[in-house]
Length: 65
Image (tube, rainbow, N blue to C red; front, side, top):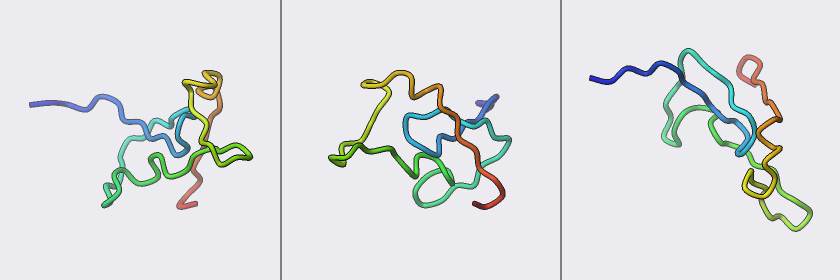
C-alpha cells in the first residue's frame, strides 16, 4: 500500500507549485494542474529548461477562481 505524504499542483506550467491537502480529479487530471503556460511573442512556450528562474515565480488560487 502507498501513502501520499505531500500533494502539489502547478497551475501554470514551469512556475512554482502550490501544496494542497486535497485535489479534485477531472478528465484532464488534477483540477487547476498545468492548465496554463507562458508564451513569448512568437507563441513559443517558455520552460524551466530555458529559464530556470521560472521556478521562483509563485502562483495562487483564490476560491474557485
